[in-house]
Image: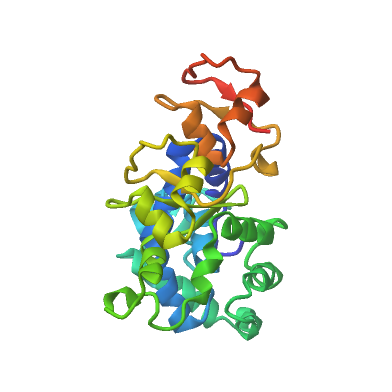
Length: 305
């Protein structure tokens, strides 16, 4: 087990990968809500925003853990060192482990940065390039942040899956440049839309006001291709929260889903599942030997590769 840090929420992340869009969208919402906080910490402490976000996603179960909800503790930091503030008691290494309790989420992010920045153990990490998230991931394990031998792979996989490395390259002041009238529409678009990477396929989530035409104009991907990539009819309208792929989807899910079926949730269609995993709809029918008139029911198992 890790010193000062809990890993009980790792199980939540793995379960979320199995049980579909309603769970998985929690990760996307978390990134939307906390990206600014991670970028701010990067500017002040030189810790890659991608690393901060990936650790928070894993440690807090994308903000769903009891620690995050009741103690604003997004990194599982236990009482220790010189901590004299409030705490809550939870079972981890011991049944009565004490975890730091913060007044706000900002305090948690700040304390995490200070924990790394002010600890001699992690001094070598700050010699790495701010964009070297791989070096940071392996360095955290080497410096003793985690005992789990797969911790670097977990961080790197999370960063790449959600394209979190895009935040490591934001120059000082650029992220809020959309307030300037001199910023191009393209920069404004990509600051309003996070570009995710699902199954090695780039995508965004539509927001209020988006149309196929505006996305085509601002991304350089034609409307015809967007409709084709997303298997949508010509007359379809976009709604906030729609998944929009910017390139062709794959024929099967990521290899991490090998042997793991998707469990159909209430109200979920095969198209929803295809969009969630970046798989072409016809391939889901083929992989599962389904007839054209098949209608999924809650609890059905859908194989993805």
